[in-house]
Length: 213
Image (cartoon, rainbow, N blue to C red; front, side, top):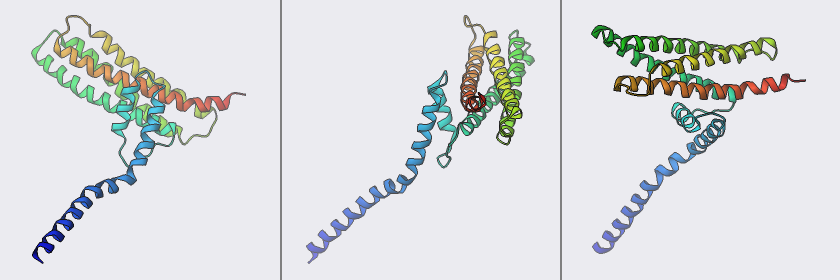
């Protein structure tokens, strides 16, 4: 009888162990299709950008598991938000470095200060473009809508130019570690902004196509 009870106990423990290993898989399964659809949409859209791998990585990281992306406008909005976040992050770093160099009266200060001005402009332009894209979503198809589209394209293009201007001012040869770090951060801003501009063009294209006779 004792042997039978011991065998029954072993069987019950085995069943419980099996259930505990299987249950998490069932619990997480319902969420998986939503994430897969969102990522598939992101990957397909990012193929039109200059930096598709960076595009997929940034957008997939930014989008929360319970978010759904259903339109080019939503994707453009997220892409611009990513660009603004990266620009703000780079600006905070460059500002910190500029203050330190100013106190030390270092000769690198002027170059870093000029770069800071460019990044400040990028942050301002990206902030305005995000606001304008929200207004664009409320506009009806017509001249007013295309005016909003033109504004976003102009501001994002200017932000991209500002970032590349900073990168160009930092020489590639015999560069200090400090300048190399700044250049890497600002170059990242330029690349994600380039991707955001491409995704916005994709969104705006359908309105331009509809306007053609």
